[in-house]
Amino acid sequence: QVQLVQSGAEVKKPGASVKVSCKASGYTFANYGISWVRQAPGQGLEWMGWISPNNGNTNYAQKLQGRVTMTTDTSTSTAYMELRSLRSDDTAVYYCAKGPRQFDPWGQGTLVTVSS
Amino acid sequence: DVVMTQSPLSLPVTLGQPASVSCRSSQSLVHSDGHIYFNWFQQRPGQSPRRLFYKVSNRDSGVPDRFSGSGSGTDFTLKISRVEAEDVGVYYCMQATHWPPTFGQGTKVEIK
Image: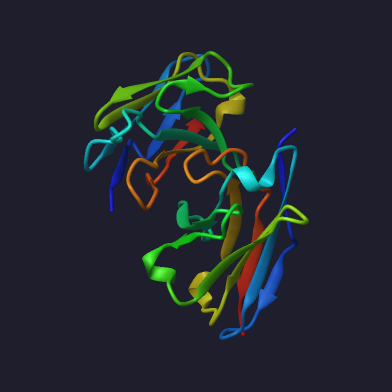
């Protein structure tokens, strides 16, 4: 079955970077984009951006431009999301989801805590 | 960006009774290709979001038929015909017709 499995929880200091992975299985990875969404504690869902594994094209949320980079490794069917210059308000659960429009399925989420 | 406005934000319901969540978009969600890229998601406590419906009313596999999705243009509705205990959680609408994709604020469904 189609599945997205994400890397484990991270604790980072302000100003540091974090890189979250999302390994896909059960479908042809190159044929579908991967979207990234985050959810701050007790808050709603915020779209972060999208990447096409086929050609590496990306589209990022304007508020994250310059701090976020999304990449893929088609040899391992894995997508990555790197966020730099972390701040306390970047503390959130980060999700990957299949498709730029489908958002199905989602990974299990990765908690990133930014704290000094 | 397209603003998605859900109501109510909190919905206490009695087991076995119906429930309805509304979602309104700030502009029409009809894409130039004729499709409406509108999804409903359920997020149970401590879980990842799960898609319930895509393109307004197409039910995902495994979603009970007590759930239904409807709407067009700018107004959309998620209905639960008879609420069960497993339906507790937060429900989100989302549009992907216009870039960037945007989510509603979420509607928390709880049992009275």
